[in-house]
Amino acid sequence: MTAVAARPEVRSAARGGSWVVYRCELAKLVRQVKVQAAAILCLLAPFLFVSALNVQSNTPQDTLFGRWVHDSGFSIPLVVLGFAGQWALPALTSVVAGDIFSCEDRYGTWKTILTRSRSRSQVFVGKALAAMTYSIAMTALVAVSSLAAGVLLVGRQPLIGLSGTLLQPGHCVVLVLVAWATVLPPVLAFTALGLLLSVASRNSALGVGGPVVIGLALQLASLVNAPEVVRMLLPTTPFGAWHGLFTDPPFHGPLAQGAVVSAVYFVLFVGGAHALLRRRDITEG
Amino acid sequence: MDEPSSPAIEALGLTKRFEDTVAVAGVDLRVGPGRVHGMLGPNGAGKTTLLTMLMGLVRPDAGSIRILGRTREEFGARVLDGVAGFVESPRFYPYLSGRRNLTLLAELDGGPAASRIDEALELVDLRDQAGAKVGGYSVGMRQRLGIAGALLRDPRLLILDEPASGLDPAGMRDMRALVARLAGDGVTVLLSSHDMGEVEELCDDVTIMRRGGVVFDGSMERLRERAPDPAFRLATSDDERALTMAGDTPGVAAAVAGRELIVHAQREHLDEYVIALGRAGVAVRRLDLESSPLEALFFALTEAEEPKEPAPDVPQEVAP
Ligand SMILES: Nc1ncnc2c1ncn2[C@@H]1O[C@H](COP(=O)(O)OP(=O)(O)OP(=O)(O)O)[C@@H](O)[C@H]1O
Ligand SMILES: [Mg+2]
Image (cartoon, rainbow over all chains, first blue to last red; front, side):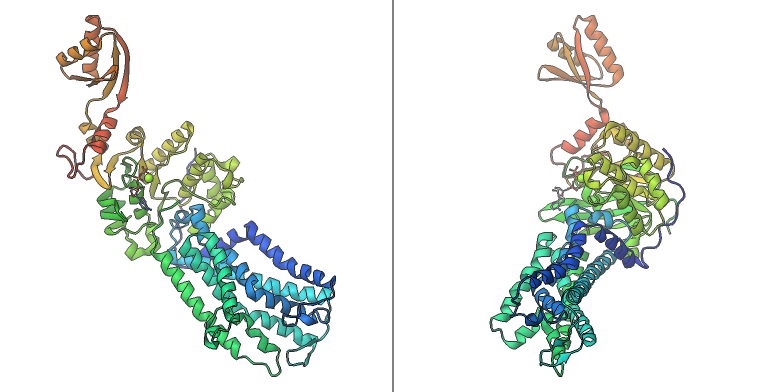
């Protein structure tokens, strides 16, 4: 048996603590099979979707831009966006957000990471940032891959906007990317919901399934004629705010509204999750 | 920050309730610097709860904790700088290798510990299995990995909750040797255990808990002084006669236990007694140590009927 040599100072935990936790969490995430599977799914699903559309003549008429799926590749990322906002994005984000805290309960590893001179707040911030990074990365991945699938498998034809004006390919690329960017606020709000459920339930099934069920239930609630003010305050409504980008003239009101609503949910959920984690006793594991 | 003479751990009036259970009831604990301090107690005595409070995992309902001269109120999570260890069995990410788990912990510590990881793995004899996923590790291998993870922090205070649990005899021997060596290097060790022999071998001081309270706190020598005579299990060709003779031999007490006798005596009195039995034509068929003096004391302290107050003969002293 040899001695563990020299005694390098365990560096001060205060500065950059969250950043260190964040990097460790990312390192853990990229090694998880479910994250690798989600990335592959995001990359391939749009291509499979377009391939499936290409072998049939009918179109998803009831979805915005659905009728143009054979005429302009730029309709593809928008159709995907229309579907995704309903449940796929909440589901995709909660795969990580709903599990990132409760997995420590499942593995019994809270005590392992919380006895390394990192404060609970630093661990919380690092983990929350990692979950958000994943959510943003996956959203960007679906956006880019569905745009690529459309352009490569259907083509770069101009697209007819929601007011009937013809949008040129260059303009379409920008609009499509901006439209996808506008779902980031509600995506982050749902990520925060996943974080809250993950901390509160200590159970990954609830953390991952909760946001999806809640998202779907709220979509339904907004379909049955809820009063406009209620509809406006639902966290799912901002997923549709991008529609205004494709009218002539464009209207940005819902985008601003959606951003504010999402920000409020985000702050409430993240604040709640943080408060719960700080207070709890770690006795399991 | 902390002078050499100031205690490594100083906890006062620590209390923790879980619903109806008082897991730890107003415990004072002082662990001297460089000492190896044992915590003993039956299941549910509150040892783990006490250690989780020291490590900041569980918030005490009352009391104060000072570790290496620092409090959590002043230093936040940095109160654990220089402290390492684990409570209950150490846990890791099963989908990562042992080495990857240690790398993550080293990163969390913020140290450039790549080379130390190999040393730590070597030290706990896990180097060959370090590349395998922890999910496939045995209990003992995880225990070893836990010790390696603690050593990465190069602690001045090591807190170990039943470190030998799950280890094979060789693992236990190595673990004890490691603790002894770290103690020799000046590391303070607080370890809980169910094994009186382990505590007797390793520890300078000992705290014995029962139902959330402290029933003994003092040095190992103090504990030994208080220990009763060892107990032996004796089988003879004529137990009735042997029992009567025990009553006539000074320093020997015997009682019937089933088909055998339990004899309490110091070794020299026991020798006299056994020789006397032989002279009297009573054959000794079996003579086994039933419980060591310290075990006997441990049982007396932890199984006595409801000692609301510590019994008068129970030493209550503070470690030197
Ligand atoms: N999370 C919890 N919820 C409720 N009660 C708890 C919890 N953790 C511990 N307890 C109770 O607190 C008491 C002390 O438990 P603790 O685990 O500290 O004992 P211990 O001395 O470590 O026992 P063991 O030797 O079995 O490890 C027990 O009565 C236990 O049931
Ligand atoms: Mg215990």
